[in-house]
Image 1: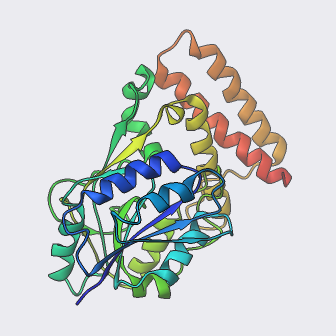
Image 2: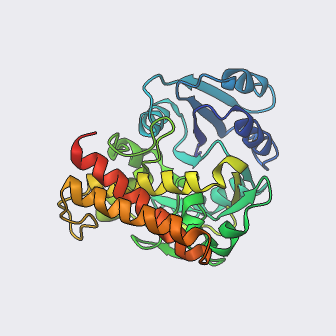
Length: 304
């Protein structure tokens, strides 16, 4: 019998985690004998432990402490701790559809040749979002891990990959291709791309993936992430990922020295401030994004 391990890595999001675990408790099939929930507490300093302990009777829950800060350290720890053949990865800030677990199980059981699967991620704003965010949603959806690849089953490839809050994979794949600890978020940092890197390595080795439209969930977006500061930190994190990939083709990082990066950042700072009051949000938001990117490249090029 195939075993299923729902894995969550968490750091200092106790109240969002509580909502996620409440959601898990409503899943169809969650108390079946072939299902477990594993939470890796990645050195949280809030009341995460209290939240986890409060769910031990309502969920088939285990939790472990990983003191090495970093999402990939926590993910790799989860891989070593789970007992299931299939790892269902999700996050500590989601609302799961009640059929999420069974949608994956049904598809996995009839596709023994497939190595990984993914499902829809839609936003759930916990407060009304600002007008500029809604107006520019098409360009900002990636900042909030929104992933919608349609309502039909499709093959997954390098241009159609699931996101980290909602994908399933055979545990043996995670053992063979560990998550790269040079990528992924550390503390409040915004460096990502760890799941994408992992899934691309699977594809490069000939492994197949499938989209599971019915395995959908909502990503909880609190007010603190509906700010220009959050958008800037996201793009600074993307800039750091691109910096780490210098030398690869194609390369997104221009061949600038520190002063040139700083000058480009100052240019976009100026035009952000100038256009904020006189132009539409898509104009000043573009300058805000580029300012964050060039500021981070300036820091990295100077060794900061």
